[in-house]
Image (cartoon, helix red, strand yellow):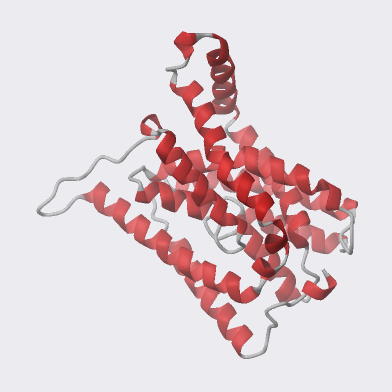
Length: 290
């Protein structure tokens, strides 16, 4: 991998990690369209450490408060009812599904799941799911002629059941094209949470899963055509770009719909299907050398 490739892929990772359009799919597609080798699951997982570092810095006050309260709750009974302490446990509980499924399906994640036809399918299907979830949220917020606006849930309402559902939604993102933020935000909206609450918990929930995945894949970094230097460089680029994107995204969702991302996902999936069906793009483009 050249330094230019690592810069472009780091830029793509930072731009797409927090948007509900799937960063792993875009890394895969960028390489396929450019005629480069597939960067692979290890490169993707490690560069995600950069974007998660951006999450940690952006939400640093929340994270410090949650971790502090959680540790105190281990020794002080009166702290166990504290919301931040409970959030600590909920992040742990919500991280279990992706940890178990990630190890169980590791070979599939690094192989068959990277087929461009599957990615096109998940882009379209999850785009439709996100669109439905967004419409339901908008209907609740706006109300109607014969119904009052419905108050949606905040993170104060989050419990173990919803935390696990969030966790299983996050685990779906092991398949490129699903999108970690897209799946968890869709799940949150369908469970009745506000857009901001769904996004905030989505980002907090991703931290342990992504960091663990990145560390787990460190042993495979530097193998094949991807060396350590470009991988580290791409991770740094992803961190800088990711921080800017997450700051913009949190402001965007406070007043805007997710529909632009829905239309983009469906359009990209259709274009990808057309290109593969027409033989312009191989469903395994770049894999053999990856």
